[in-house]
Image (cartoon, rainbow, N blue to C red; front, side, top):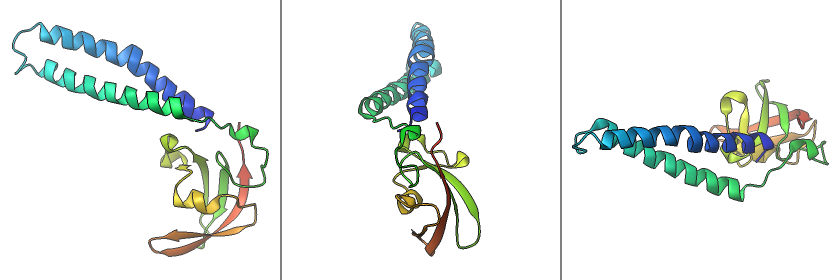
Length: 153
């Protein structure tokens, strides 16, 4: 994953651990003291949300433990597309797009961040500026021409 993705997951983990979970534990404790728990909405919802937070915390801990952080700015071969590259390409219909190839936990299509295992990223891997690569889509093949490759800090 990129350093930006590492930071985002670490911040999410810290927020869940230090802000959300303590507030929720306090609410559940208060609700538990109100008597009958079987019809206590605050208690039931709180316990359910607490399980969700704990599940997410376990997931984040595993991901951060096994993650390999790759800084795109340190890429020695900036003339080819590799993990962390920001690639501008044009397709058969003359539609120009810019994407950044990131880890699976960092995908954000609204920002143009695509997973390194996505079909478009796989098609572009190791391409150079001016190369034309073939992307297999459900509608058939699409030719993509690489216009620019950047490795932002």
